[in-house]
Length: 178
Image (cartoon, rainbow, N blue to C red):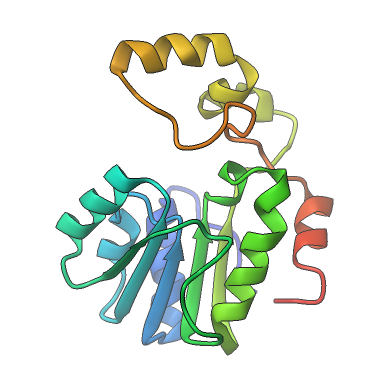
């Protein structure tokens, strides 16, 4: 288990450093978005999965040599134990409570025994209410106005938003794993 991020270190820097330290040859980024993390990884076989077609398209432009799949993280189209490292960074808060365990189960299934799992998520602490990214869930009327103004179609339901996770929730999700 690694230490927490150093002050001033970005999430992508932290994850890339953890992957580099693991000497992973194959890496899967679940919820890869636009592919920025994949682009920052050390030399390895890079895979990314995301359910947003526009994000996958952008990730392909940035990472032409990566394997990118338009898919949810709860049903990965790959064999068991194929990746040296699996990244689930700032994703679990977007999948909805009913899908969280399935995403963790899939990450575990595709990770080789002894592999590296990098997990980051926003914490449901005292200041979670101040997270501007949770507007979609907390203030859906405001998010609808924003989405209409910028012609954005959300990929997930309004009730999912950017819901922070608690320590007991993470412990329960990872029970008997990692």
